[in-house]
Image (cartoon, rainbow, N blue to C red):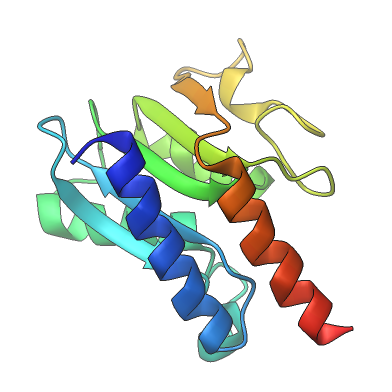
Length: 149
């Protein structure tokens, strides 16, 4: 699975989050061969869990599937720029590459408000690729919030 295919899957997962009343964010972890190792979508509302962000759910799934919390040489593909909590989880899990869709000017921690994943003081810094299918990701979020207003 290439990054575009993984982002399309993440967008499908984000749509599932929206159908459960949560902010539409989806994430997929790819193993070093490019196969899906874990996936997730926002479940904060559904599960009443403040840590139920798509990235955390996907990282947990990938760790369970691989049998290790160390996700070296894996790629996380996510529809929205991660927040500080998720950026910290990405660094802690040793994800090698982060691919994100839309930027999050209100809570983003990969360059918008902060840049946690590239902070030189940390022991691990993943590569970052931004803007993949950004319009599709942003449209999904815009539509979700427009329906709530």
